[in-house]
Image (cartoon, rainbow over all chains, first blue to last red):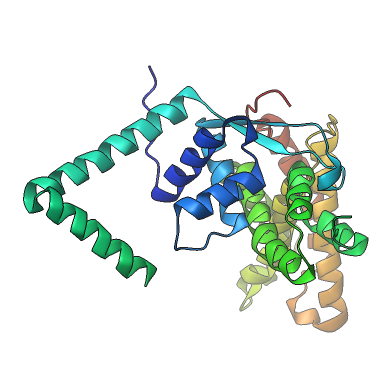
Length: 126
Length: 186
């Protein structure tokens, strides 16, 4: 079984968006979903395109052109689908995030870790 | 009726966006359209990124390095054997010879990024290289007209371009661009 390549934080967000959007994963919807996940940071459409290209080159997602639609001026969508390698890469990232949280709980206690997370969230959004 | 971007704006963007990703990017920008300001902002954020991403996907650094070496060696070699080796010892002489090399390389990188993956031809590597060397000639013509001190002598340009054409075309035939990454059903 091939070892999944390591993925950065923004790549994790894009992979999560592709996974959760399922059949409806294409440029516009992925950008909206990543924007939600990355709040309060604003995300540019170009950054999403670059990351999708990179994930495709790594073999974590694949893409195909759909039928053209009138609401897009008669142009097709490039739809994305998560590949098995992508799922494994995301699982590894999630496991790492869980281990970080567990270490915080061990050091600060469950309530302390929660408060620490909330405080960090407020500072990031402020 | 849903507002739509102007045809002129879409045509200009269509020219700027590489053909390989033109369809989906123009479609996404159209779908997100909510006024000219937002459309311009979206285009400004998306178009440079898709161009850079396309260049990254179509450029093989190793082949590019070989092409640079072949081009520069052609011009330096011709200067050495054509009886005009004095240019090699002039101040900035080697840099002058690097100008047509750099122009051709930039043109080759952009030609690859803007190539239509649907259009394939066995003579494409040669035609593309000839076109890019033609642009190097055009840049030299500008120097001949404005600042002849920076221009490479015509004889070196002619023979150097001929040898470059053969070497770079051969490199492109032996190391074809890998722009057919696996996509799902297209």
